[in-house]
Length: 79
Image (cartoon, rainbow, N blue to C red; front, side):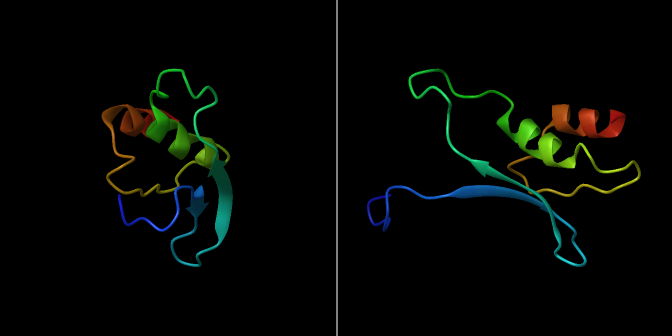
């Protein structure tokens, strides 16, 4: 984006309660570990599964279309 004010920014993934907006878990995205390596596979699935793994069963997980995948739906259903 040519008119973007800054080249760098922060990306923070947050799992929060939809009713109270309480932040349950946060994870800062620091970029790829190896800048010359291939892009990370299944990033969206990992971003959803990491902060929600300590939630109890019977919880509803809602996310936007960036995180939606068949693999994620199957993992959430099983776990």
